[in-house]
Image 1 (cartoon, rainbow, N blue to C red):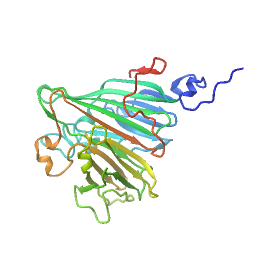
Image 2 (tube, rainbow, N blue to C red):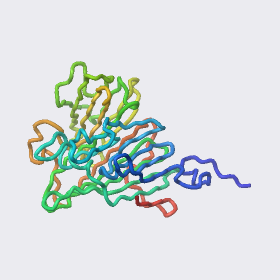
Image 3 (cartoon, helix red, strand yellow):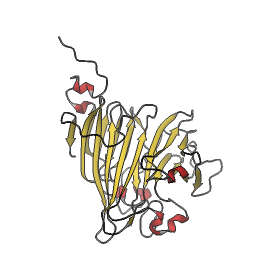
Image 4 (cartoon, rainbow, N blue to C red):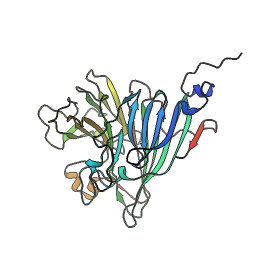
Length: 359
């Protein structure tokens, strides 16, 4: 009697006949979460369990790896709605996109951190593709920041995760679809929390040429630094800092930078990688107050604070009509293992490899 070969990857359970459906190793389904919000829930064998927020700009919500929560969650249980301020609506999650009309504090009638996270996505599709013995789930959709007489910015987002991997890749193509030039301020708010985040940990930033400069929004509290993680304390204030490198300002389209969260033993626990040609700044936000213990690692393209915000478009880059800006952010919560998420757009799969779906 013929014997099926021993599986070597999660996809092989299906292709070799050990599992009848691909859903066993890469389950994707739309659910309605508390508050009535639509969520595309991904559950990958040997990889991430991840919520993609359809009503919040295809940002990334709750996330687990190996059954352990890795994304920070705020104390806010649900989004109270657009009548509330940013801090009342902010629920955390693995990735919150800030912009494109503003990042940082409110200015000139634009709310804190802009409109993206509060804007539903449209034309959302997803598919499952076999690659190197694993299943890659790819979610794509658009988010429009448009008005009749004002700026018209549209982003096409593609999210990729794979079985057997702790990494998620977010690729954005921002386009000025309007008839006039428009500023585009972006900040990718990666939120990490306990137990991935631990007292005595630190953020290690690869500055490319080693010349990292740091400034803080407020004076550092006594005994605190911008990149170290203290223990939780009810009296701790948040520390917001911006980090710059000459190498990032001179980056080419293929250059990237890396920030690594380490544990108290110095071992890496998470890695954030981003494209420095379009995101030449890094902000960090450490809020170690009891009950709000959080770390934000935030690649950005414009100043979050300081005198630069008095410039036109608050110092953000400007897109001419029809011009595009491409940005990539990769979050890997298992940096000791090689990522199985494709580095770029995958080749068109054969029909037997592709499982296209529309939520």
